Image 1 (cartoon, rainbow, N blue to C red):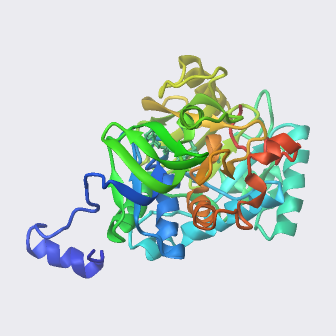
Image 2: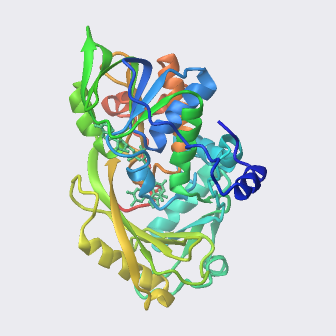
Image 3: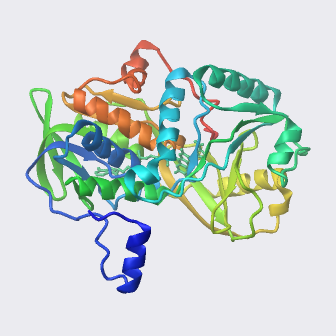
Amino acid sequence: MRRYSAFAIAREALRHHTGWERAWRSPEPKKHYKVIVIGAGGHGLATAYYLGKNHGIRDIAVLDKGWLGGGNTGRNTTIIRSNYLQDPSAAIYEKSRSLYETFSQDLNFNAMFSPRGVLMLAQTQHEKRGYLRTAHANALQGVDTEWVGPERVKEIVPIINIDGPRYPVLGGLWQARAGTARHDAIAWGYARACSGMGMDIIQQCAVTGVRSEGGTVTGVSTTKGDIACDKLAIVVAGHSGQLAEVAGFRLPIESAPLQALVSEPIKPCIDCVVMANTVHGYMSQSDKGELVIGGGTDSYNGYTQRGSFNHIEDTVRALVETFPIISRLKMLRQWGGIVDMTGDRSPILSKTPLGNCFINCGWGTGGFKAIPGSGWAMADLVAKGEPGPLAADFGLDRFREGRFIDESVAAGVAH
Ligand code: FAD
Ligand code: PYC
């Protein structure tokens, strides 16, 4: 695979861009692979990438029922931060954030990582206590966050209304090294690198069955025929419950729609990400100038990639209260994804009751930020059959044993 570089751009400009290779191959499936990953979202592709890069396993197929990156990975609002409360979460999200910093160099693909800072507003005393606690925990964990008062909030985001009619801003949890990245580029960068290592990414290939013998996985049935494998990784986010049922076990997961919207593009007015969880809205500005906006999940379970209308109104109302200058903006488009939520708002990276079958899910409303760290940890689990230090606490057994990793304050989105 030829490297992208300034020299390559100049060379292709001179020959009318006729020499670019396809970023990844589109092969037909082979009969057998060492590892099959179901789901070509960020987490599935990152799992395959680190299996190849860190463990030398390259006989891998990544299967997707749609197009790669067409699930939540291509539908999210790209917020990257590691300001979680519990030690296992801080470790995996901070690993992920640090891998985002070097993603473009490591994968030779521009991820447009923008460490512009993320501010989580406290608008009730309860929220203030929660974020102060997180700031102290982060200091012990080596995660660089700080509690800032209302005056500093106003300095960081001049367009904010800190004297809100319902909920004045009491301060916020500020992570200066947090930010955003281009979501499609993350899927495309991993896909190109996986394909370059000889792995097969097979799109339009829905998994309809999981085959096993004596309690151990032997392969999958798909819309492109049966494919055998030694190990299987299920990484399908909102469809995790369905795939687990197909594989013969149950998950403590609910799926619900989460939506986002963008405004018409305007001149730069906000250069960080602001999340206001009490009033249920968050906002940043894209490079094109659109305000990227989101709110809470739908309050009922579902598989519609759309989201209900009342949420658009509630979210926009909350943001107009917090940022009155946006009141005359037109909203341009809206979309949704299906998020997979656990009761403790923490992910599952685990062995399953089926031998050699592993699952990575439960990232819910917040898994974009986790893609590189999750892929790293999942690759470890699949390669060795046992979780490494990053995944050790996120097993399915925690639900049976009551070892919850409560991240409801850090989840960032009301649900
Ligand atoms: P996906 O990208 O959904 O990939 C799963 C893939 O599995 C899909 O491509 C799907 O087609 C495939 N699949 C499903 N069933 C089958 C099958 N039977 N056979 C084959 N393939 C199958 N997170 C953040 O950190 N920051 C944010 O700002 C943020 N904002 C969000 C905003 C919205 C509106 C949404 C919806 C989510 C947001 N998230 C955010 C969450 C984040 O997008 C997800 O946690 C993350 O993208 C999940 O990635 P994934 O690879 O696990 O899943
Ligand atoms: O996890 O930071 C997050 C987030 C913001 C919006 C959706 N998820």
